[in-house]
Amino acid sequence: MIKFNVQNLNIWFASLHALKGVNLQVQANEILSIIGPSNSGKTTFLRELNRLNELNQNFKMKGSVEIDQHDILDIDVELLRRKVGMVFAMPAPLPLSILDNVLYGARMQGIRGKNKLAEIAEEALKHAYLWDEVKDRLSESAFKLSGGQQQRLCIARTLAVGPEVILFDEPCSGLDPISTAKVEDAMLKLKKDYTVILVTNNVKQAARVGDKTAFFLSGELIEMDKTEKIFTAPADKRTDDYIRGKFG
Picture 1 (spheres, rainbow, N blue to C red):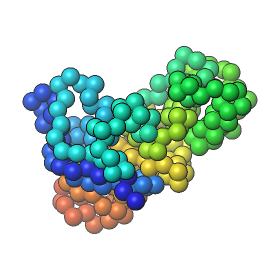
Picture 2 (cartoon, one colour):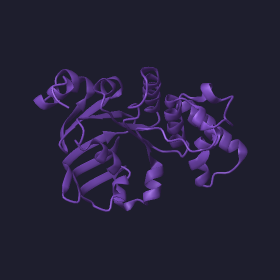
Picture 3 (cartoon, one colour):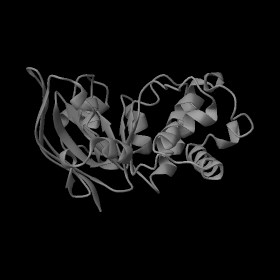
Picture 4 (cartoon, rainbow, N blue to C red):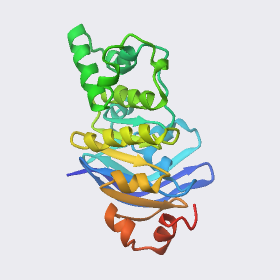
């Protein structure tokens, strides 16, 4: 089943042509890894999937992005962002308890009832592989958590509002190897219930978790294929050069 269908997507920020004629499809319940050097358009592409680029007043786009065969421009933006959640590079817990962090979005949606909220929090924390580490300290400040735990808390907060898609924008860039492994484990388990799209500068991470991998360069999608093929027999020499560390 196709989750996203992107057709001839072009994006500008004032005179900067950030994405150039991108065409791709993302299947439901898969992990798509997106790789490429800095300023290749990876994050711009990711942010377009839930219309975050519109926050830039110089933004302009042509082409189309569909989710479940509906143009994202025809969907209420707040509803879209609940459906397509995003986890950013640096964890940003709120100055609240661990529990209140997880439930912030759910409460904003009007969900009430102590038992219902407790159920949502436990499920989200379990999906983020954090429950066992925090279940006895839910009333503590989220700032007492380690960096890796804070990132998984942000994943739980995203999951608590019931998304269908989770966008990860370099979620492990500031984490140690052990924390990175835990976030990657969470991603691999999440694809059973969610569609996951990961932007990463770590090609080894892309290879570890991605079902498919897309390589972006200078705003263009150079190629996209099954991850094993991208990393063993890419169709384009530029992809091979990037993976081998010859540039980037």
